[in-house]
Amino acid sequence: MTGSTLTLATAAGDHRALTMTLFGVFVLATLGITVWAGRQTKDAADFYAGGRGFTGFQNGLAISGDYMSAASFLGIAGVIALSGYDGFLYSIGFLVAWLVALLLIAEPLRNSGRYTMADVLAFRMRQRPVRTAAGISTIVVSVFYLLAQMIGAGSLVALLLGIEGDAAKRWTIVGVGALMVLYVVVGGMKGTTWVQIVKAVLLIAGAALMTVLVLAKYDFNPSSLLGAAAHASGKGDAFLEPGLKYGATGTSKLDFVSLGLALVLGTAGLPHILVRFYTVPTAKAARKSVLWAIGIIGVFYLMTLALGFGAAALVGPRTIKASNAAGNTAAPLLAQQLGGGAGSTGGAILLAVISAVAFATILAVVAGLTLASSASFAHDIYANVIRRGRAGEREEIGSAKLAAVAIGAIAILLSIFADRLNAAAVVALAFAVAASANLPTLLYSLYWKRFTTVGAVSSVYAGLISSVLLVIFSSVVSGTPTSLFPHSDFHWFPLENPGLVSIPIGFLAGWLGTVLSKQSADPAKYAELEVRSLTGLGAH
Image 1: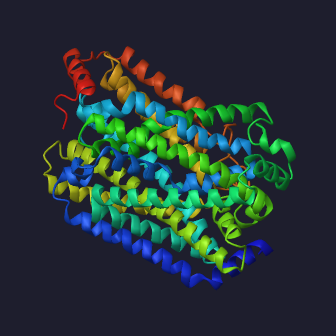
Image 2: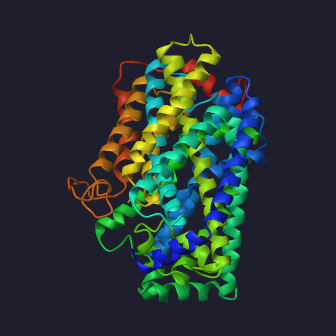
Image 3: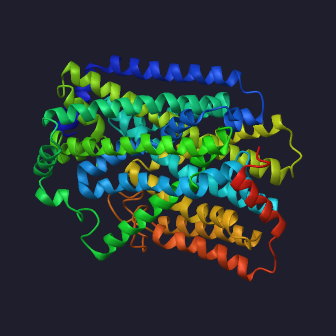
């Protein structure tokens, strides 16, 4: 056990009661909100879409809450602290992605569907094959994303409570999984949305407090902060220039392009973000909620700069790596340092507050993800494929609750083995799968008149299978000390992120499937979808 981890563990141990109290208060408050919302959930529209009763501003806050995940807060701060300028590219990618969602997806999606992404696809295609494909894709993307949140939860609680060994981390992951299932089963979309709103406010406040404290240390002069970070990193000016993480070789430059593509195109295909557009009454409110989200998320990602470079300058990369090799604990370590350092009461209080906020972030995001994937299973696969549209509302909601339990169990099992990976990197993989499988199908469906069922199914499966296979055969899973299986090596795909290859495959398969199939699209159905998606006439 290294000295730095020991001091942190000791400090956390001294103030464990305070930390546990803060955690307890937050969990109890959110459970209270969930139970209250659960009592108001009367039908499927309430459970899946919160009764479509949220305003643009409330939904903008909730979208921000869904999007600013633990991976953003812990993972990006860590990547910037360890890789400097190249780490900030994650922040830029995550933010720019919203323009694609705003301009191409938000409004037509709100007008065309009811509860899930597959509603849009099934509008003019054959229901069963399209809903099956979309349901499977939604669940796979959600499980990848859930994995990143659980990794963050394990690192965070182990750090906070000064716990050594894997057993305690595993119990933490099981606990988070159990809580997230409870949120979804009891509260549905109403409960989950209110939890997101509370959490977004807490996260922005926590990040703003730390940003002000970091800048105050350098007389509010950003160049002094950057200079100190470059000096402490041991890499000098190279820390502030492109190329430290992506740029040493041709492959790493390609990896950067691949990452950028996945981040920018992935957001518009993330199922838990897409279902948020259904919680508002009109397309105008959907558009307004995305504008609010862009503003809130933009401010937050600017603050990750101060957090990441602040952690590099004040904590130092060596201490961060000693605590967590992937850098996931940079933000909490910075909080402790800003409060007065290890062993000080101020340090312990700030560490506990920031960690409680990060934990709140994890709980809120996993609840949103579990809801999106269980709703897709119940509404798309169970009600429309297995029961062929004959399931009643109560039966459908019951199957969604069972699905939430099953998906929670799968995520817990996978997370137990994945704690070596950087949370932001795993989220980038989820973005790549979403951009490869969901985005091409959505765009073709909304904007290409000739698109057919064969094209839709080909696009989803080709994007999904190619992206998942390329991840399995990349260094993320085997071949390096930070891989999922560090002692095996069966990787042959040179890039960490498959987006560069799998996203074009998704688009190409959709085009080929349509051109080569003997089916022809129904022009009347497309005309109806076009009018509905652009005007909202006939929307639910």
